[in-house]
Length: 559
Image (tube, rainbow, N blue to C red; front, side, top):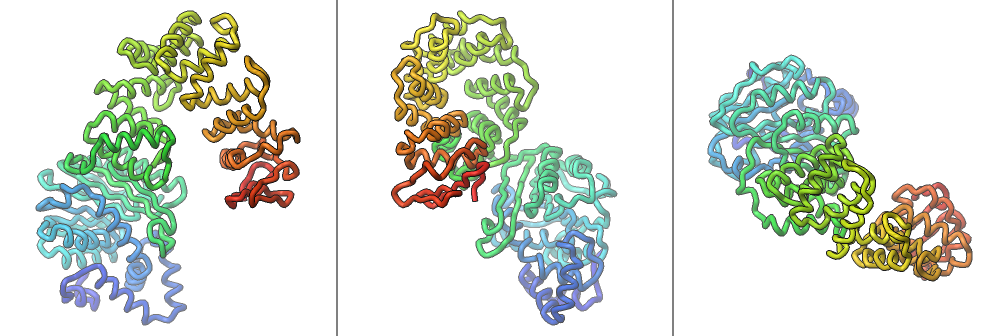
């Protein structure tokens, strides 16, 4: 099935040094000669490129209207392919929902610059529109004159494994350009077909605009069903992908092979950077995304530290969406290599039921194993299990002993919990002095619970003299770490007029956090008691900071 004996086919067949730009020029030349009213009509008929194309005019309009955007996204995706596929002597292409073969001809232009000697042995084109498919066959025959061009004129609902043939001895690039987000077919069924036909080395390049949640979920479901290594994922919103365009771009790339040559960076450096991000010391969005991709590659090559850190990124939604199932998977892979931190994270997953079912006994089993190996963080969590009877019988004495041991090793959570027990007489005789002492020691390690507790102690005179300014300091530190209870306490303090003069820059920043965290108590703020200096003022409804930030004083919404 190949277009022939048309004016367009004549132009293509006699085109010298074919390229995407030259093909699109033909479309642009066609559209420019049409009256504006007809151009608008044709553009609207495309339905944003989703509907099946059934006329020459629509073929040209599609290339004119969407070609440049699709090409930019595809080239961005191709740049992130693994080096082994770029350097391969020979590859096959399968272009799913190929339309006019845009993805295939864009790969031609890309690889011509990267590895001009690469041979494309076969191009399989799958498309329900007979007219678009014959056009794709024409173009690919010109761009890949030595390749076998195979056409499959079917939609994905009627596609079967028998329709597609590929060689297990030659790497295959599967192209999914603006097709997986289309909701006209069952994504899992289609993914299973692709998975079944895949043999040998395969790269899966997925490109899509950013759509609503359901359509984006289709991309994730496809990758999940495919169950291959996803080593690249990027979502770029309007003006992020191209500063001069309102284009959006979602790119996911998976592979049946991860080439260790892809690791062109020091995995130890990546891990240390990841730890800094996980601990909240650096949350720059671009950097988080970059580190997430590097962790992904390191994890896929089997580095146990990267596997554990990648699990943390998925658990916290850093550089990607939160996904407890993926977090659990990577913690488990790392733990299977004996990495203590991953075993510890697995115990938390079992305790909280994140990525797996709640299993307190399994959590305790892992914690005991870690305690036996001297992993100090595990003592605190095991003590909590004994104190609350999770997976073991309640044993307050055992819990206190574990906290004392870990406190002697200066473990912050154990210091806090031991201090809390002394303050409240839990498992030990009540001793306010000891309680404050241990909680203060925990606060010196930036323990958010300790900051909150000390704020309460100095506010209410628990084991110390009442000191509201010091209480405000501790609540503010906890509030900057997103502790909602501390922020609410600050709001309550500043409702008392006696303390309005203590409201400063740090407290203002905390209340900005309260807005973003959606804390309803922020509605209690009134412009009558906040006087932000220097450069701050209020208008009765909105609090303005000298840094330009604004807080609505009703129901905690930012404007």
